[in-house]
Each structure stands twice: as C-alpha cells, then as structure tokens.
Length: 242
Image (tube, rainbow, N blue to C red; front, side, top):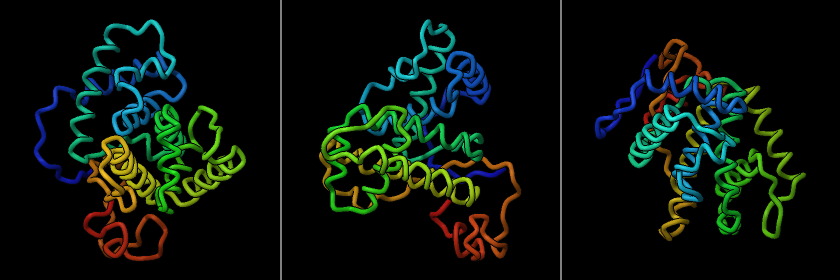
C-alpha cells in the first residue's frame, strides 16, 4: 500500500472508522451500488453542481434515512469537497474491481444527466476529448438520455460495451487511467461550464490522486501493469501520472 504525498489540507474529522461504518450503512440502506455508486454520485454532484450534494441519498432512492447515516454522509461530503477543491481524488479499493468501477461511473453519469442542457453545451465544443468523456458518462447513466443534441441510445450502448470491455481486458492500469481521466474532465470542463471560465475543457489537466493499492509496488524497470509493454518508469510511472 502506498500513497502520493498530498498538499496540506484542513484537518479532516472523517476517520477511516467512520468510512467503514458509512460503507456498512450504505450497503444496508442502498443495496444497489452501495458505497462506490454513492461516491461516484457525490463526486459528480460536487463537480457539476447539477443538484445540492445534500440530495445524494434522495437521488439514490434511500428513504427513512437513519440519523447516524445522515450524520456520516454530511461529514463525508464536506471532507470530499475539501479534497476535490484541492484537486485530490481518492480511489477506494472497490474501484480496482470491474463491478466497482462500473457502479462509480453509474453514479457520475447520474449526476451529469440531472442537467441535460449543460450536457448539450459541452457536446457542442469542438473537442474530441470532451465528446469522448461526455459520451462515457451519458452511457453509464442509469437515467435514459434522449433529445436533440444528445447521442442516441444505440450509440451510447456501443460506448458502454466498449468501455466495459476495455476495463475488463486491460486491467488495473487502464482502470487507474479511466478514473483519473474522468475526474479530470469533471473537475475541469464542468467547472468551466458552471462558472463561465472559458474553454479549458479542451485540455483538462489531470488532478493529483491519493491511491490505495493492495498489490506490491511496481519497480521502475518492471513492465507497466497497464499492459502497454513499456517499462513502468516510461509509462504510468512517469511523474504526474497515476
């Protein structure tokens, strides 16, 4: 297990024990998707501002929320917002598994489809990268997408199948790339769309990331786990890449 040293942040009141308890409570209150879908939706709400982040449990369909769950969710969201504002993206261990990554993308996609006018605006930008990322998020949304200026259902299903196939076949290196690339897009393109900050969405910069791993650290001269055939130091071991 290792992590990239992060800039100093305000001291968090949300502990690993709190996160473990939150995960268990979400598993019982929100059995579809659990913590990773909650995490994806919460990240998406903070990045897109398509709905208040406090509505995350309502959007997940949780009713009769226990007071303890409400308290933990509030603390977690405040902590997550601090980290995202500092361009730090946590990667829960469940995201290393295919199903976890798919649930996370589903949560992000749900946040994006809460404002389809904003989605249309981004799709009109002359940027292949933005178009690719928008189609990825719309493809994984649990909400049907339709209307002028939006990809059709058949196209989105093709995107979904292609992305799922790549995540399944290319392993953890590709998963890491997908997570950081998608978060970079949300925290860049959507931020600019919301604030009117111009077209930085054309070339979003990847955020730093705090990454927890269960496998041994890859040596600089060993093959990169993404399957590129390059040495790790020449591929995902390059400074600035995850």
